Length: 142
Image (cartoon, rainbow, N blue to C red):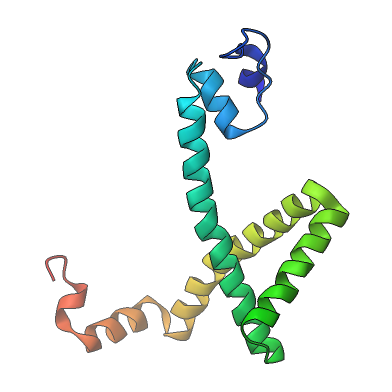
């Protein structure tokens, strides 16, 4: 954020005060042709497409497991909920939701392996279980 206030706008020469990543890259590398802005925007759109698609699939799976809904109705209800809390809470609601999801993922990342190792009987039980599957799994050379 500090750098966006220091750098000048690539096209006008005035203050940049970039608000988007594409605008920041354009000003950071002084690209008046707008090529860098267009390429970065295209890449963001392509990868965001897959991010949103995975969220829609997850919504469909959630509503199928919890309520028995499948397909289009589940996705429509999920999208409606997301749009509603985004409209009511704005960017802050989206940011807080992302923070809560990130904390939950970190906790799961830390807790699940510990619970799995304990339920297998510690590291000894883990290595015994892996060795029972195949002798080569514990070897560096396989």
